[in-house]
Image (tube, rainbow, N blue to C red; front, side):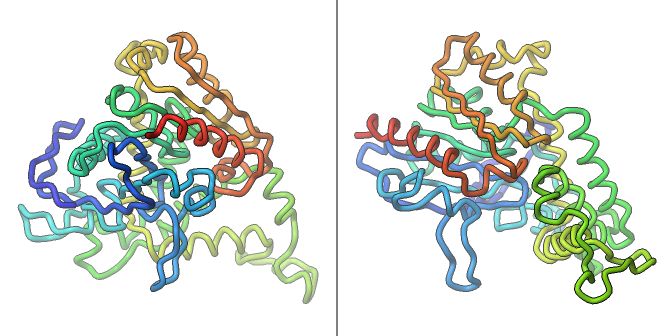
Length: 367
C-alpha cells in the first residue's frame, strides 16, 4: 500500500512517498469488528502465518496464527504489516530516495516504535478498520502493541503484550550497541552506502546476529542443547588448538550469523535496534509508567517467561502493576519455560492455551 502524504517522524524528519507491505488472513466481517493486528519483532515481517510456495517459507508465527490455532483465522481477520525501515518490502534504506535517485542507505531517517504505530494506523484507516478487536505482539512487537494502547486508546479493545518490556535496561542497550558497532566498523559497510559498492558487510551482520542470538536463549537451554560438546568429538574428541570452531555452540552461532547475513539488511538492523533503545513511553511522564498508561482503555493480556533474561518477567510485572494502578482489566501469565526470550515463538502448551483462551473470550464480543 502506497502513501503519498508525508509521515512526520518523532525525530522531526519526514518520510514521503512510502510503501507498506502487508498480509491478511481470514475474512473481515461485515462490521469490521474481528480485525486483529499482529506486530512483528526485530527480524520478522508481514509474513506472519501460512506458507509461501516459492520460495517455501512459513510465517514467523505460524504456530500461533491460522485456522483452529490460538489466534483462529476462522474467527478473526488478521493483519501483519512490515514496518518502515525494514528490508522485506516496506520502504527502507535499500530503496531509492526520491530526492537523490540513489538508495537511502544511512540517510534513511531514524524511526521509533511510535512512528511504526502511526504508519500502521494509516494503513488501518485505508482498510476502513476503525477499531481492532486486538493488537498483539511479542518482544519488539509487544512494544508496538503497548504503544497502540497509549497512542490510539479508542482503536483497540484488547492489547496483548508478550515477552516485552516498558523500556530497555542499560544491559540491553549495551548489547544493541556492541552489535551495531560490529556493523559500523565492518570495512564493507562504507558508511551505509555499501549498495553502491555492490558489497554486503557480512562479517558485521554475522557478529551482530551472534550477539543477539546469545541473548535470545537461556543458559539452561544452551546447556541442554550444546553443553561443552565438541564439534569433532566423533573423530578425535580433542581440541583443535587454533581459533577455529571447537565447540558445537560456536558452530551453531556461526551458522545463525551466516544465514542472517544472507537475507537481512545492515542498515535495517541499525535502525531497528535504535528504535528498541529509544522506546520509553514513561519518559515524557517523569519516568512514571502509571501516568504513561493512564489514558489507555483496552483490556490487557501480558505474558512473560521465567528464563527470559533479556526481557525478564519483572519488566512485564511493571506493566501489569501500572495497569492495575489505573484500574485496567489485565490478565497476567508467567510461563515456566526453559527457552529464554525465544519462548514466545515456540510451542509450549501452557503458553498456547493462555492465548487461545483469551482469544475465545474476545470472539464472544465479535458480532
